[in-house]
Amino acid sequence: MNSDLKNFIVLDEIDSTNNYANHLIEAGTAENGTVVLASYQKKGRGQRNNYWESACGENLLASFILFPALLEASDQFYLSKVASLALVRWLSTKTTGVSIKWPNDIYVGQKKIAGILIETSVKGNTLYSAVVGIGLNLNQTQFSSNIPNPVSLKTVTHMEYNALQVARELLAVFMNLYHELESGSFLKTDNAYFNHLFRRNEWAWYREKGELIEGRISGIGPYGQLLLEVRSGAVHSYLFKEIEFIV
Ligand code: BTN
Image (cartoon, rainbow, N blue to C red):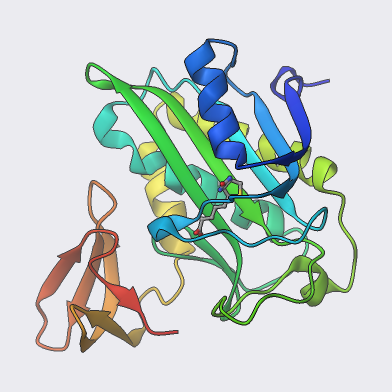
């Protein structure tokens, strides 16, 4: 077995796999590449303090633990890029139309299939630990009405998936991209991330502080900011939560 695949902790039920992973790090019992998986999360956490909904036993709920000593604290967004690209790469072996909705939602067509929640700690100027939390909708076909636009792999491909098997494959893809990054392939990662962005180079509507603006994604800033060209030709830069896609 690949040495990256040895440390899997598989739980039936937990508050959140990210919480569990953070506790392991605090207790000093986690290793680089340890994965926490659960069938059900009572308090699954999403971006913007949202609850991450996932029916029991249907989907992938995983937290990958890393000790990214080779990454500067200011390079944190590269973990989002690598996690997003790993999901795009794996999903693209199963279906078409997979993209990354900035900063790290994974879409199939116009619908969200996966979300990522990364939590890091810093020591000096470098990252000490990272928990890369991934929720990937595999077999669930019905979602509560307050989730805007969910989709699962089963809905798209009409096949069933085994979460543990998917986690192993995804971790292998993730670790390959992560090791490439550690050996310095920042530009390659930047290009791959940009090339897979949802609505890249396409005029579309966004909401900024309650106002609608028309823009076209023209790049990603050094800390992961969204660079949006507007009709006047000016380029605006946004941090996460400063701009909302109208989907
Ligand atoms: C998002 O809002 O898009 C991010 C969702 C991240 C959900 C995953 S599920 C596994 C891990 N544990 C959590 O509590 N959250 C992440």
